[in-house]
Length: 113
Image (cartoon, rainbow, N blue to C red; front, side, top):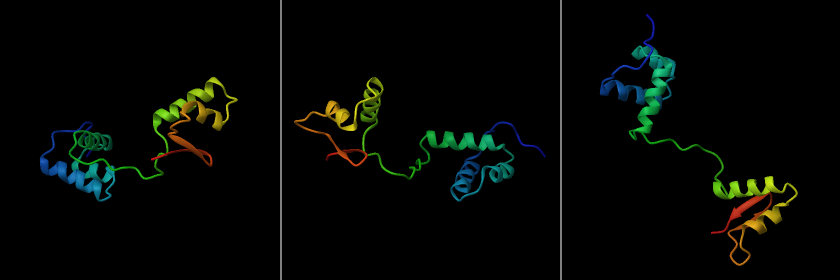
């Protein structure tokens, strides 16, 4: 018995069973065999389920950002324009000396609160 290529219209009970099974650690292959749907179909369904807001997105673990993406972009732009600038030179160009938003700490920048 082969898998269906796409995702078919699932009942609400089947949708909840797929989401709960995935939340409890069942693999996409196991869920696909149970509901006779391909792994990619299960994956697409779960992505659509999250995008529609029915399930909260799980935040990834890791180190919190110490600077904003905009600030990082500015640092990268300045370092590409002049590759001989030091971290102190870049910080002095990006930060106003009267009200510094960032200070040097070790290797990177930290935002003052």
